[in-house]
Length: 423
Image (cartoon, rainbow, N blue to C red; front, side, top):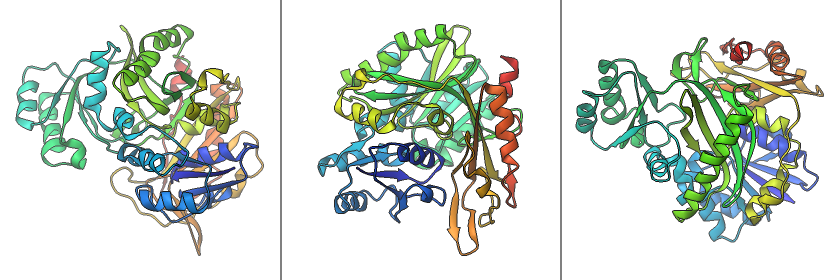
């Protein structure tokens, strides 16, 4: 079969790698792709938001299955466009992808269906938000309602910080129209865990757990980013926690979306906070996490195409989802200055060191092929991932592998997975 993957980041590289392992697949295309994805797919110069061109390409090449990797096209309705053209596509429709596209929607959904989450209020005017903050308990969390590349969340320790945050999101529009509505949420503490799941609209099957590191600097300092690294599984996601989440969070979310006339077919990402009162939902995403996909997919035993087709056809309950009894750690190599400002175009050396090395992966996030060779082309450049017998072993392997790659302006955190040592 012929498969088209839509996206250009490390997540899409991990998906392409996983798809390439399937015996069912003869040819892979990726739009627009990147220099690393070229190893598995033919990259085509169509942007992820160019729906008409994507549909036309899929028809022309007689694509059997399209996998949507990114959030923007999902929230924008790319699945609806493919389905309207009679094409087979994997991902939630626009009316279901709103679970990521609007934080206010997802919070209201959780409140209505009694899914545990932090207390909150939604605001459409900065004046009302500022008035509310005058009597709110600090610290507090401000969230831009819409998509903001994983950066639209501000944790404010004082009232002054919170007031500045309202200005940043709602008046200065730092995150664009994503800040037209803002969620003010109570600050909850605990261990964060990410759980990805395959969904067919009725059944939800969770993958192995992971934990992301959002802050740019060591010790969880600096600005929020799209993710500086991740590890899987989380030692804090115990069987007891898993059982609770399946009963009170995952299946109730599937049932709630179906009850609202928004059946969710695709990948549901649930960001959890393991608080003293029990697990609470921080956020939902409507696709594979990045870089979570880079540690979860290398551990999956199943043929990804078989699982995806079961989701589309409504037979996910027949799939026995299995993962290796090992661990994986991903360290993101970024451009110094990310997420604020950074330079691109630096030649990357050492990528060949990952060839034919079992358990070591270099997923490209922001790269481009030029006459000089493969160069940096984004804030997050590469996701260096390694597996190991356990988390400490995987962490040691991943950090060793970061030394195999060189480029000017290379930056990374040095404490990805350090929580492992405290488990």
